[in-house]
Structure formats: structure tokens, C-alpha cells
Image 1 (tube, rainbow, N blue to C red):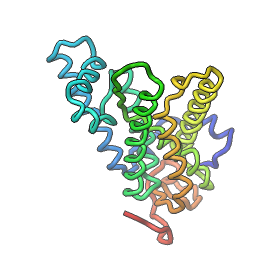
Image 2 (image 1 turned 60 degrees about the vertical axis):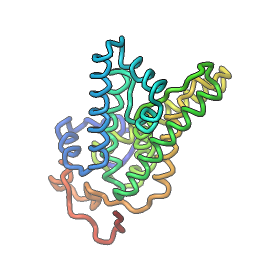
Image 3 (image 1 turned 30 degrees about the vertical axis):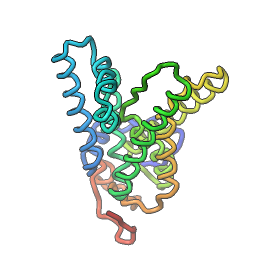
Length: 249
């Protein structure tokens, strides 16, 4: 385990990939796992419906559902995606980094963060589209709000620990990239006077994660925070939790 520093952030794979995979497998994150399976399952249905209808793409199928069955599309909107280029990055980053954030939060609090980020990002995208887009119909969807919430949480919460695992260093680096992306989009929107330059769904998700990290002082600390150099600590295997740490859910 290492402290969060610029040098360490540049070398998250210093000890190789295997310890990171071991650390990730050791995490308990049922909410993230359920979301990941749900997104994959819904996308499989979208792909099957595309083949059944003979439409050119999943993107067109999804937009058609918004037109013909909005009562179904909108409640499912955080789980819907417009194609492989949309769903694969979202699923991979959700599974990789959502599990880390969930391991550092009481389960109900993580579930609340994910729900607010998912609903808030969709609502923000819909409102932004109505306000600034020329299209008469609005169809917004995707789980990226939750991904950016996990990123925002990681970039604020994890550096508070004296030492973190290589996996957690990778999460902080991902969080910094998410902050940079939203920052660049915001500056571009201001410079170009083009509101469409910023993905407000990402921005809202990031904000939810940042706020959650600021308000969450208790941490289950599943990977251990005793600072020892034991083999379990280096491999990222669970240690006994500190009994003085408050717990919820």
C-alpha cells in the first residue's frame, strides 16, 4: 500500500496487474454487480429487439421506443444504451470503479448515491436538451452518471487515507481524468458559447460523487487501513475491520 502522490499516481501498475486483479476480486459490491448485470441484460434485450424489428442499429431501436413507448423507456433510461460504443465503456468503468466506491461506503449510502446520480444525470440531460437542442423529441439514456459519481467520490475520498492499494490509486487517477474531462467541456462551452459542448449528465454525476465524499466521514475500509506491510495488505485481501469505525446498512 502506498500514499496518494503524483509519483504513485503515475505508476499504479508498479507491482504488476495481478495484485490489482486480486484486490478487485476481494471487494464485496453487490449493488454495482447488480447494476452491471442489469445493464448487460437490458442491452441484450435491446439488441434482440433490433434484430427482430430489422432496424439498422440499436440506437434507432432505442429512440423508436422513446417515441412509441415513453412510459417504458424513461423509467429504464439509466439502463438503456445506444450501441456497443456506448455500453461497453460504461459497463467496464462501472464494474471497475463502481465496486471500489461501494467498498468505501455503507451499502445504503452507495445505493442512494447511485440512484441520485442516475436519475439526476438523466433529468439534467433531458432538461438541457429541451432548453438548448433543436430536436422536437428528447431521448437521453445511459449509466454514465453513476460512473462519474464513482469517479468523483474516489478523487475526494481516497486521498484522505494515509495509504491506499494500487487499485485505489487507479481509481483516483480515473477520478482526476473525469474531473479534467468535465472541466475541459465546461471551458469549451463557455469559450464557444455552445451549451451542447458539455455533457451535463457527466457533470451532475461527478457532482453527486464529490458531495457524497465530502459528507461521508465513516468508511468501512474493506482493504484494511492499519498501515502494515503484510502479504494480505499488498495483495489487497480483506483484513479485519476496525471495530471503532461507525457502520451503516
